[in-house]
Length: 248
View 1 (cartoon, rainbow, N blue to C red):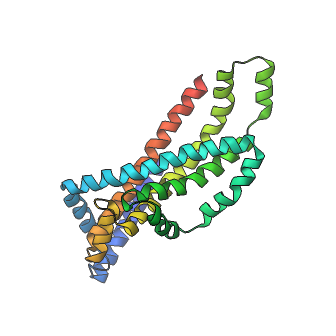
View 2: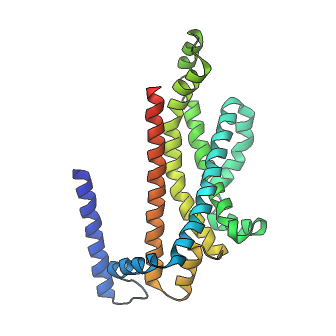
View 3: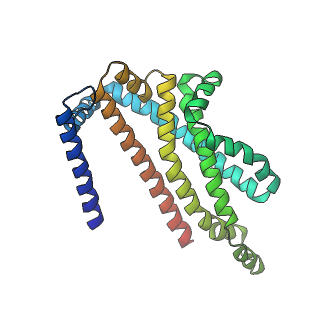
């Protein structure tokens, strides 16, 4: 409770600094007040187009995240068992980690339509994060537990749940928590470059073109809130799964 109060007070402090800074600057094109941003958010919420853009971008970004999560876990499992696969994938994973989002977003426009650009970009962002975290978890598995389970004749299903799943779920939770935030950042950035109709990225681009700073700040706040909500929902789901596994 005390931590939440401190966090809230810190947020209020920075909002006051923002408000005072905007009032002192007195240039709405450069910096709008937080009250103006809140008002703009409420104005946007009342528009049907706002919700269409939210659904458009959320669906594609989360699709890329889900595909990346499944692919990263799958590749990590294979690499954990076969060392030559790990060596074979190492250069590719290193490239995916290092290449700038803007670079492969522009390259991706050659391969896919702007409508599905964010799916591919978020997928490529998610895969190396999940892969490396899962591989670390697989390397850290307690092999003595596996051997003990084999000696005592524990069924395969219980071995999988009690030994593998229980030890790897925290790594999945950590990887997903990091990846989902980066997926939102990269996915929206890809939309700003590709400008697909009806996307959040298109709204940001239009706000920049027409110097609608309040719109730009409002959409940015909305993106932060949706990203935070997605992360919390996923982490909560994984935590529930961890507790169920522990009870098995």
